[in-house]
Length: 218
Length: 302
Image 1 (cartoon, one colour):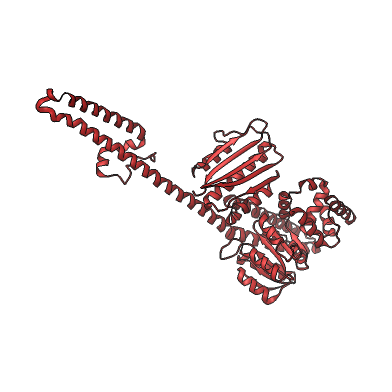
Image 2 (tube, rainbow over the protein chains, first blue to last red):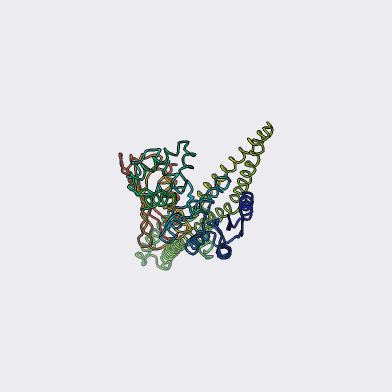
């Protein structure tokens, strides 16, 4: 993958570059503020960019706003936003930013997740390939804020687990691995979830993430 | 009314310093009452002397003495009232500055934590994660006991680093939730989505209150929602933030067991104290069997 990193902390920036370089990926630019990020993305057209939410000069949501404008102006570039905090408002902004809204090529993770190198690089790969990577806490908050509690209550505990992992953007294989069940069982759960929530079934990973997220946010 | 100090307010004139003993500032009401009583006594004496002017003869001028004394005493009382009013105004202003200042300082501490310790810990955890992976490959290939032990240590350090990041995050969020930079609505959206009890949130604030008021309103809602989750057994709760001219009202209601009271040293009493620092008000309406409605009224400027 060709990657642009935007992170104001030099130690974290260097650490990310090291991890990704170690995995054989190419970090084409590593910048420390939002303006440089936009310039670097326009210049290099990377597969994916890793963006910290808080960056100079205001240290509020400069990174998020840059990420939203990249989603709008460069729809082919995957955007993985990572942050010390998960804010429900940011999730809504980020998922609604692409033309027509959607979750393709977008990720939102807590910064802690980079400590689990393998998982982080997998998530980044998913985003680069047009998939989705949402932090478990993002999904918890979406479930907490959802007004569809009646529909959600009709799911069994296992179906809720599967739905949470699905909303994180994981494939059937990954869900099966995490829950230690067979892929066939995952497929059955997914079919049940879609019929209980009244959603049209969909095979493509990112389409079904989109369906679930739309359901939670409506 | 005055701060509990022995010193006379610096604005006092020389005459006032002569007329008013410093200890009086500790019991202003008592001393005002004594003064008024003395003044009235002097007036009575003066009037009595005036009534018997003929009998006094050449000593008639003595009648003027108690009346002059009464005038001086009443003037002193009047000046004391004026001074205390301006002092209250000064204290209100300096308290508002302190409240704003401490809100700004907390925000700075949170930012310093974010830029410093949190970033360092993330970098450390990342390196430990990478080292652990590399060592795991070698350990699996060679099967040496020492390497396995090193891997265990690395594992423990990795977990500890991740735990430290989580704790730092919770600590920083407890000091100043970063979403407050985007207003009460944004911060409460996250707060209400994180809880165990489903919360309906309504925010109607056309204008942003001052930062200190936003902070107090946020922590009131957080504390009240914690109470709902801990004590009420409620199935759902509502947080409403509304406005009136010069006023922000936060109302948290739940359908739980009720019976909440403001008890000395309890959570609600602590909240009431915090609200009082900006002249706000806390009202609890919680009959047995519920529902509980807690209303917090805050001025929109500290």
